[in-house]
Image 1 (tube, rainbow, N blue to C red):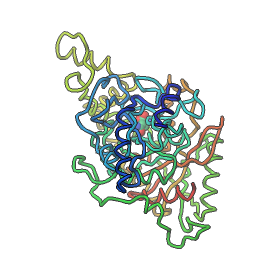
Image 2: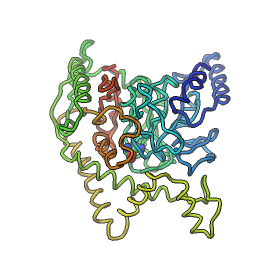
Image 3: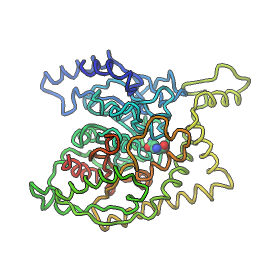
Image 4: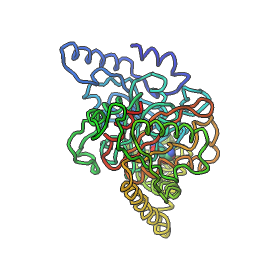
Length: 456
Ligand code: GLN
């Protein structure tokens, strides 16, 4: 009730929620209360949450931030949502996001932008912008996001919260509306690494309905987060931990305020016993063109299902079937989504496939190999999440390729399928939050959470 009141009082200014289900939430909370009164339930029983509107839900509408799905109702829950429900969390609603998770500022939402609680004139980041705002404004303690090229880490950084994108395959993509299937990953966003660990333990795990789900035993990320390192002491819990700083993550174009906050965070990690080592990810810059070929290619295929026949919007008037497809898609998709469908269709087309798509796939492998080279010299990698703090609304809206450049530090890890997280380390220009990015090797979520927890 307290959080619903808080949402009612503040969300018109914040724009975090696309849908609030007050009655349903109170009913679920009452059920959780009954369970707890009977001495049952677990760490998450009765904990309020909310889901990025990319996850399909049976009891609430799902839009993916798009007019294309206005009025759509899924017959089933996404696996991640079903698992969090089963763990006893109480969903309050669905969270604003960029249309089909394409964007870095939540300004591509077809409904309304979300505003950064630290400065309402600034963006909260994206595409999980509503998720970040909901946690940062204390409307909900922990939520779900999705990260294809940075969409958990970057909004977490911009709003001063903690978010983790696990290794590709750790969380099921079943019921997560597909953007770029070889990159899409679910993950939690919350106030602390500890809260993220509890949520991730409940969300993750093998799912036979997702062909790329990793078949590993259920993980207790909270226990992994708490487990002491060999040789650790109370004063130096990170003793012996080697943190690699890729020199390409500290380029001349990195803004001075972000650099200072990140360096301060790294100095804290050193005090906690970690050692910093220089490493190199030589193809960092190439991650941008590689991602912006592969992600649109996959999106152009995934979004072909929105044709006016099966889901959501259909044009009211049309001459024949082809005309119905054209009008439906012209009306239903926003400008950024159309741009990506066109880029994707182009790079997959006969004659351009080899020149663009195939080259991008080869470079993707080399980017992943570069990380493995780094991990021979260090245990995890650290750097900034984004080159600047959250920008002002409207800035960068006219030049989409300029916005793509801001993804430079999150895209390499995404292309490699590695786990990554954002941990708040201070503030930069305008008092805006700055996150430190930690990238681990495959299945090292526990190590990332342990390190972030030590810092917090
Ligand atoms: N900003 C990136 C994009 O627009 C990442 C989005 C995401 O991770 N969903 O594609």
